[in-house]
Image 1 (cartoon, rainbow, N blue to C red):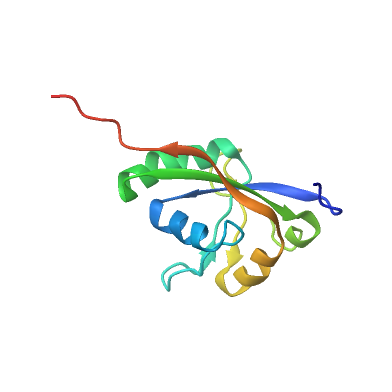
Image 2 (cartoon, rainbow, N blue to C red):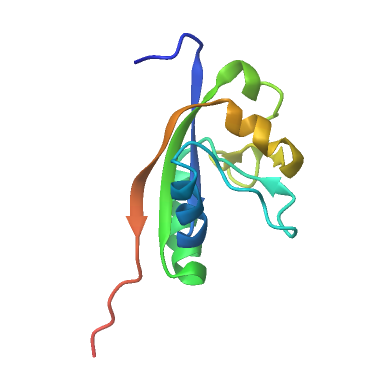
Length: 123
């Protein structure tokens, strides 16, 4: 079923703890941020999400996942695209106090599209 309104595809690199919270929310919302996380950062580029999940989440969280989800494009227009480094390192900055409203504009389900785990070490 397609949405009557245009949507934008976003990606979110995440670790196992956040992914479990998304699962508990029925794959339809992102969990509240922790006090030290005042901004929610979805990204606009799958390759950028893969690099974060593979290179950062695996090292720091023991596993990394890339999720993909759709958000109402008209709603997203309130968030300017931020370039966080190179030309393809693009993200949105959603203040934590707006996350419930952001979640209400997710269309469909949040999907896991890539999984990364540490490479097994051989003796």
